[in-house]
Length: 563
Image (tube, rainbow, N blue to C red; front, side, top):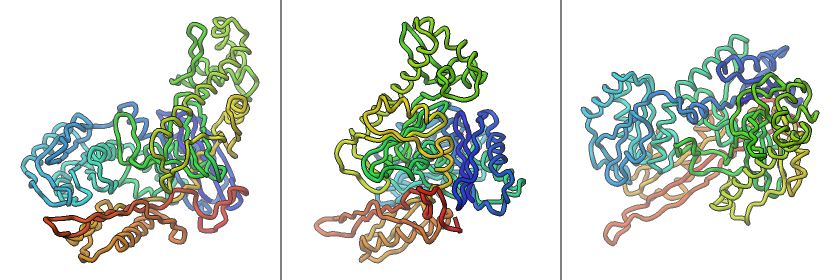
């Protein structure tokens, strides 16, 4: 059995999946101030009466790290950056404790300016005196030669609890994004570590000593231990869980729009021929442009518990949330109160919903029932407007799926897939507003958690080879190989796939079901004078994001015993 768990802003969804299908599904309210207890409550309910020996692993997603970033609540981090000629790293300052030091490599990874150990030591001592506990180190061209980053890290490590280096997360060349990614790795590390260690210890106390995996923004997962090295990969795992929850039921052809309508936000994504779109450069969150590879998703502040605004007869929904709907004891009226008045939800105190909506109805000069209909319409129209804005942006630039560049015509989704707590209610209304077909994703209430459980283990590797220097480097994998001058593009692709396989197995992938592919592969000659002195080769390979092998979307069952 596999446990899938998704911590959302309003609810935490938990699903238990076995070869018989979904054994249990649980939905509990999220207490943002006590997330640990929230998770434990969900786990206790979903495992009640289940033999712990039958549970093979748990896959978690959370908005915890993302919430810290968007709320500007990140802890102090000491950033030490070396750039050299060209771009001034100060243009990409991430935080208050940002320091640029001497030292530089050229574009082939050769040292052109040595580091100043005394300068680095003074910076580190000052950070230590300020009480900074975590640090990040980023140097230009470190993916070609990480020795400067390693040297700085070795000098300052005794003074900090944890030091992150820029070459470790991604092999992509982009110095500004590498700086931001390194900073976020260090900044979200303490909350990531505390949260998941607490979960792990609690599972052990309950007799559930099972492997824990973390859902990544690209829709794949990685082992809990691996996530300590790349904690920023937990950012935006929640929206990716929505995509993975819908993926098994997506049409195999055409464009589809996935809407996960929750209490706080609506998360949306596009699928082309059943394949998610990708942000190939990396996610942007708050002011930070990163190298964190992710599915292309967007969130808007419209959900069942969003605040209703009325001004001069005009209704707007959200983006803020002030708690639950008034029908369930909340402080302000929300779309869920409108559903309650219209009889679209069970439970709740209809009289409180009416009491909350009556002032709005009076200002609109309509009945409470008619006001509720207008509120419902407005929420649907805002969601569709947000989706259209996302589609317009996607159509304005090259589109990459998780497999390849998609060079088709303009994307015009003809199918809506809806999940989340109020999915059936919204689906019925959206059918009247959307020019296409609309469906509700099976197990819509916990589809995110199902997506977590079914996500495949993924990773990628970037390799650089310089036949003039006779060296191949995959800095993120700590791999450096001596190569002959005859080293070819085909040799580089094979070496990259070998490293990818090794990395995937370390992250917990099933060795019998690795879907590896080369997604970038090119070379160019290096000329000196009138002679070719060698080749510069770059290869990038990935494990395709997708559902684990052996899942039957029709029967909803796992068909392999070793899952």
